[in-house]
Length: 107
Image (tube, rainbow, N blue to C red; front, top):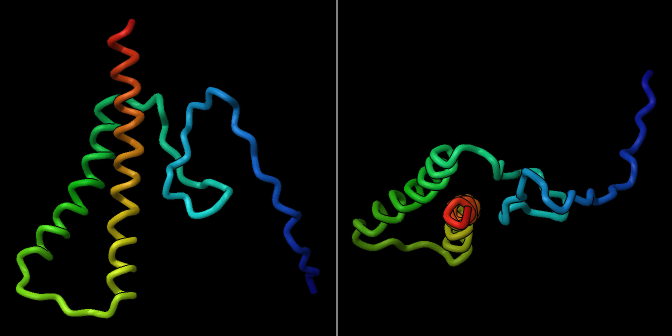
């Protein structure tokens, strides 16, 4: 029979000062697992941000066309979080895109 060993204690990694990868704001704890490649081509960054923002926009537009929506407050809270995560991810990618375009202008 195999003996199971617990995971070693967690040590938060310290990223290098000018890391190529930026952690997304929507990571749910101290150890980020989702990142943006800050050196990705500009069109790829734009597509990633646009996809996330447009997906949430489509859901919100569909909801706005309904007559009335009745639900409990915790369901609204969950729904708001469901929409906020991809919006925040899209905004993080737009921030990277903006910094890259601004740097390009100043060259």
